[in-house]
Image (cartoon, rainbow, N blue to C red):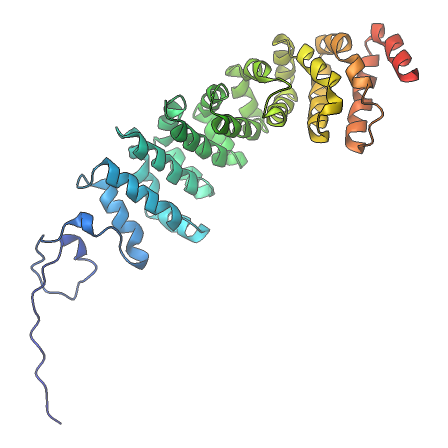
Length: 337
């Protein structure tokens, strides 16, 4: 057999960033290739390559925004999210919330929302300065940016651990500010996040500190597009003793009475939340007195409902009102009619 002499290796001009990808090539690696032209590495090197570009100063704001857009579909599965978290995606992306371009801030928040689904992502976000930056961006002029910030809060709040993290980071007050947002999508996510937060006592306590009952009372209106979401948040907060007092002080009961008078035009889920919120508030003595004055006729009008859950709530409310002696005769008269 004839032995063939190995071919001599030909020097190849490549960028320094490829050094770890092509260890079999002889040096020198000269910088004749612009790192920005290599936008993404193949396979498992993808995250590392993009993180390197985000960390450096070789790409401008627009290109960083494009890289953040590329990252989002790469976080499509739990496994990929976990790998990105282990590689430090939060440490890389969190500082970009302070970038001078709004589009970079917006996409950075969206990437953080992707990893906030996982417990490890929530913990990583807590360990960074991300939440403080997100809190300050709630009142930003750009609606898309505000929406992505609220999306992070909403996904953080889907577990008790996430709610505790938000409560400790003063994020409940930021969500409370977002309840006054004029953008419908932002307002919807703020209401959902507040409802999730107030499932737990710490979240409710922070909501009360931020005067959320007063804000929700101002929002409550028959013409509201988010009536069910508003009532759901009110129902959660009104379960807390201090929440009952706060709603009574905010003078919400006359508004609940107006809604009860038009209950025949409302959906069953909305009626259930409406009566449930009223029942929660009537545990408070002053709340019971005011409800007997403003809500009695509307509540009794629902007594004949065919929905079992709503009927139980209505019967509970009527029994509670009967404990206020001046209302007994009127209740009996209305039920007998």
